[in-house]
Length: 194
Image (cartoon, rainbow, N blue to C red; front, top):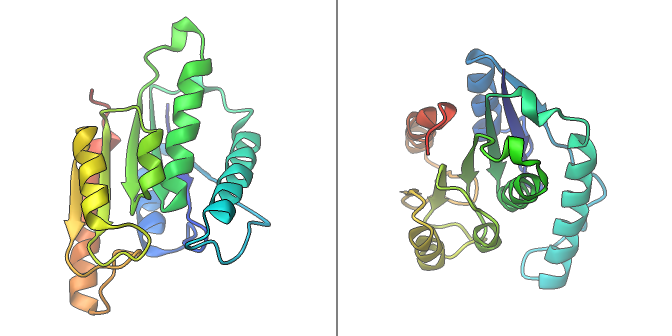
């Protein structure tokens, strides 16, 4: 059995293009899908480190509650797909999950797709089986900082020129081509590799 967990952003929900189509792709590959839902998160968090930390704390607790009954051992492969703050939630949850598992589950197979990760994501990610996607005009994450963090952890980083936090530029053809490129680069992560 295979499991795909979708970790949305604050405003970028699972019905928006990147998560919607990656979820659909996972279903077509016989993955069970779990979509995390957050509620009652703080508003206007951009640039406010206290609100950002509070948002993370609330979202990780809600995530743990929603995933508490998952029988992780029954899955031969797991993929965590996060968007924005969801990348940090996915990475933190995955790290905590692996550290809390019994020795019989030490080699739990988790791949990560990090869509527009925040710098905080890289504090938690502990897997070489990850790929990150970043727009060079993303107002939530500075390109040189994301490049440096991904490089330090040897995580492939795919960059999209002039794309914002949704990996969009405003030009329809460019945006569709970027979406297709994200999918072509994500498909190998639906097969476990170390």
